[in-house]
Length: 206
Image (cartoon, one colour):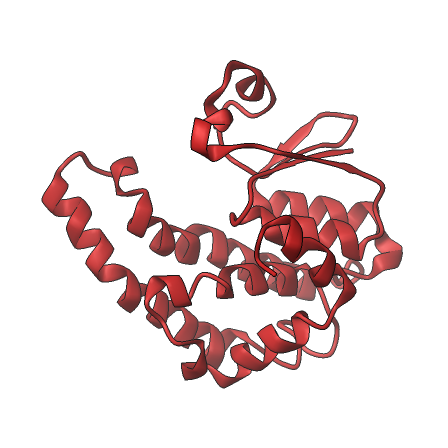
């Protein structure tokens, strides 16, 4: 497998999952400073021009929730998902899709407002709103969605890779992770995992 990523992006989540699964893979870094994600070569891999992408050998998978599920199902011995419980598996998907469809979008309003409008005043308004929307999202996760000690309860899953990744963005988004004691404690415990200690330096987050 070949994993395409850029440092300090949502690719951190899938990268941690690959390490948790003890997968054999090659990682290839894209340089966003020269818009390598928009290069002709990379657009043949992922026409969306975004990361992460995973070349499985059978084809390319993009979008973090899809990559996480693929890793969990391909490496069942790693026990990264409740594969034999349809309800719990759906709850895992519910959590990951919320991160992708709502929380990541909230965060993107800070730097990627041009995706939604060309109105400079509207883009500036989006940026101002980011601390509130990110805080509101994590308040919901802390109080309604996070079971503990891991996202789904007693068992570690790909949800934990994903939540940890996005929790790294809070400080830059003007949100104090200390406002969410369960998530702050989760962030600390994640940093003790070998997978995280391997991945963070690669993404210049150590």
